[in-house]
Image (cartoon, rainbow, N blue to C red; front, side, top):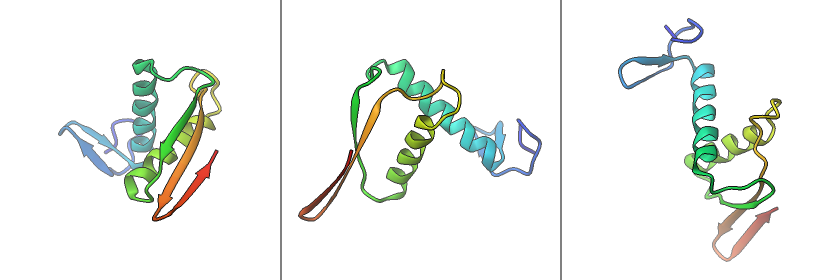
Length: 96
C-alpha cells in the first residue's frame, strides 16, 4: 500500500518507499523543486532556456516546470521565466 495515502501501489523506490501514482507525482515534483532551490544557480526573474526534444524525458521535465510555475502556494512557486526551444532539422521553434 502507498506509504502516504494507503491506495494501491504504483511504484516502489529503494525497496521501502511505495507510492501510488498521485503521491509519486507529488514526490517527484517536490524533489525537482528542492533540487533547483538548493543549487542556487537560478535567481528570481531569470530567463531560463529549456531544450525540448519531444522525448519522454523532455516532456516530463517540461511538465514538472509548468507545474512549478502554476503552483498555488506562493512559497513553492518558481520565480524564473522559462523559454522552451525545440530544434527539428533546419527549423527552430522558440516558445518564449
